[in-house]
Image 1 (tube, helix red, strand yellow):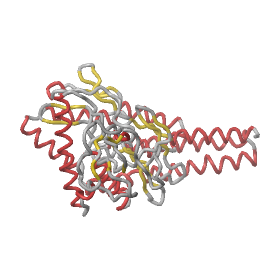
Image 2 (spheres, rainbow, N blue to C red; image 1 turned 90 degrees about the vertical axis):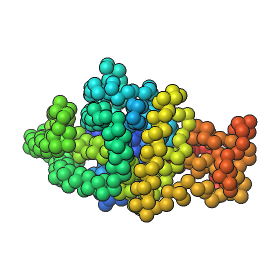
Image 3 (cartoon, rainbow, N blue to C red; image 1 turned 45 degrees about the vertical axis):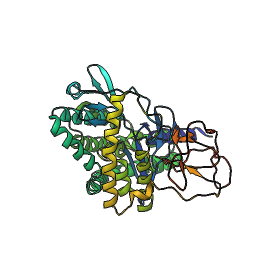
Image 4 (cartoon, rainbow, N blue to C red; image 1 turned 135 degrees about the horizontal axis):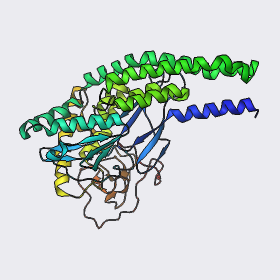
Length: 411
């Protein structure tokens, strides 16, 4: 490989690195190609705290949505920084879970991407923007009276499933970011088509004299546009806006992904199922919503806490979300009752199934090990399989009558 090829390969690697996004566990990531074909992303890498995803790398760059929904369970008694739902295949995020009273949350503040109460970490998001929005919601709810708070929580759950609002927000997001994407596309063509061609023809030094100024001019324009968008969407986070704008102005490869950075957290007010119902095709959206509904109806084990007071708040939030999601699904023309019915057996020997992931089992299995020990139900009756004395070894079959090694499709 020649020196020129090495430099161009390094530039390509730097750009691919900018396409990768780290997302803390508990969020769902959707992506779309430039032709609007959309899908739920699978992580490239993951650990106990989060996952690495890659966005569409080629212009006009497609779309990249990180949707977390509310990270809190709330009731009249207080807030728990966790939910009964487990949107990640590997379970709940690793975090300390306890009940916080509304009186203590009146003093919540954002420190970077962390929400802190009295010097103690309450919750940590992906960006300072997420933390600032979480603090604003917590403080606003803490200032309400107990009766007003109950009504506000019900309204908050219903609004998180407002498909019309999701569609309007998505249309606004696309419209606002369109000029930014156009300049990003031009900068990409300059960096990876015009400049390499000129270097091949004239060499490095003659090319750099005229090729570098337009690169930083485009980066500056992108940074300026990003700052204007971020000021409208995140008016309270001046320091973070300035830091990101400066980074975009000085790093052309980062500037190529400015639209991804600007859109982070923009759909955070909505439940992932509601976003999927608008962003994905109808069949894919319903399948994803069904998996989330089963997870809510039969949460993954173990629960994120064993404290009775905290569990009561988790259960109140779960019940409220199930009710809101049921009403939303019926407005979509879907039947949520069908989502929790026993699946059709894929093998004559399948006698039991997991109500959360719909994994099918045979033999004397009692619990679904892939869902943390969720109790199995009889395929025909919907009843449990008996006490804990049964055989808990893997007896699940796939269509090839073998024990699968992968996780079942679930939320």
